[in-house]
Image 1 (cartoon, rainbow, N blue to C red):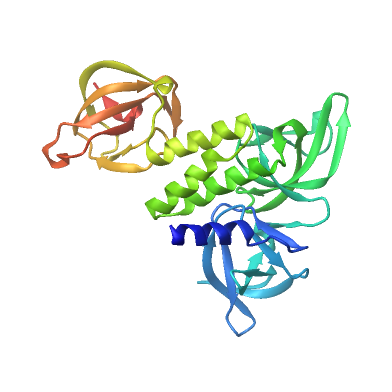
Image 2: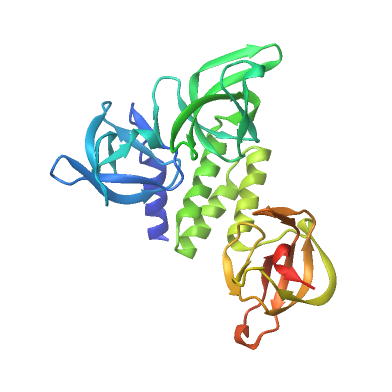
Length: 310
């Protein structure tokens, strides 16, 4: 428990009491360290939502990798009593009225603070962002500026969302940050500790539902409302291209528990109530147990229906 507490403490107070901070907005962002030759080399992965003390200036260095990239802009930061660099394209400043926030319900992106400026893009519930300075009411709609990680453009961008879809509540942010940290960990004990903290946080109803679903995905817990029992029947794994089919502890984005080759015979006993899209196929997910002797001792998992043949 001492180990868990020390990690909690470092996570929660890493940026406390500093007047200037930056926050990582890229999923699985990076910290870089000085290589002593005016370059920055990779140091470690950092979960989205991690905050750092910032010295208030930016610097340019050569990014040292397989292919060196000169003149890359970094924030010099302090993390766990050591000096590092964070790429300005992966983080946002927490200064003035800016603060870390979370998308509380799916949010359509707007280029301007006008209803007609909507984009064919949105941010999913649970996305960590930084709230900006600009806000405006247009009739009954409040627009709010946010900074977020755009995975398509590979950089942090500024756009607008409806104010009702973003929360700056401390407990909402706290819950999502705990869950993001849990998702980044490999140690099962500490992963469960962080995930439990996320669920136990006094967050709003929408965020509490989000972190509970994330908890269920991590640990393979299916709520009875999400699936229905079916009369058991045999089916065959058929991916169509001879590849193996991943069987997960939770539909869609759960952990892979086993990969079954095409031709494997399975016993189907449950079906999700809603369909999912995998590639170009749309189908239900099915709970299966393998009847192949080489998977003896395996208790079962969820496989996409597009990979099953009755």
